[in-house]
Length: 119
Image (cartoon, rainbow, N blue to C red):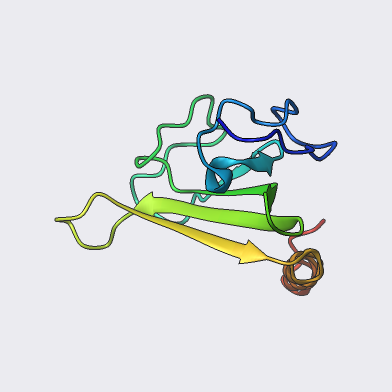
């Protein structure tokens, strides 16, 4: 077992992660916020989705994270069926600084306003 970590206020566990064997396994993670990607696959479920089946429902999930040795950042996970029929899913993690996450959010809002979808 490792020495307890001081958790962030937004950490979903909030207990210092004492049961983890290695420092690298001690990280704070905030609540996951998921957006289903309805245009990503012809097999996407009709919205609204009540229950998500990973690997079957294309989705983008974001959450706050801080590893034991670093500063907080935003983790974005893209999960969708793989374009190669012989592989099951694409599962990609992207890490963003808080500044980069705000910049991306502003770009997305601007694009939605450009196409008139914010009304």
